[in-house]
Length: 232
Image (cartoon, rainbow, N blue to C red):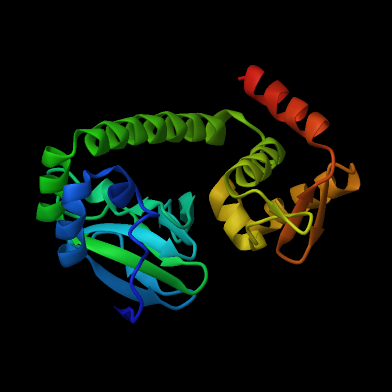
């Protein structure tokens, strides 16, 4: 990771969007910009917390060790998203890792400045509280699904979620994803993820081209996921 030459537009991330106008000058002085190459770690699980990051441009995966020599992708993050917030607390170590999925630039704020920002900007504090609540609900749902939902159901749900979060471009979900990352995101092996994706393709619900996916029939795909969830 190295310092980035270009700075952000002071408009994309949560902190810049929700702070008081008078606080933006403090943000401009306090923020630092870094550039990462594809596959480069922003921080590793267990590293001491240095602060909070906001993605300016690019995409990242947030992941952690899961069992022996396995990885579980907790979430995907894109421009404007916060990364590193799981390190806020009493442990002072990041409980997850963050890796760039493509060339990415991030803004960094020291933890003390971020905490000061929360005390000064009530709207920011409220939105961050709601963000934590939504993420907790989503994490609990994902953990439940890992136990009770079939792999095919988890993959179908993952595709629907990725389309909702990132939209589409040229007919494909606007988020290229390798089979290995799909496996890590849905808590299965590469071989099983590949086989289940092929089943979805064979049924005509999904089409794929390398790392790109298209949901061809969203209604039956959603109905399948709903039936899986209701069967828990």
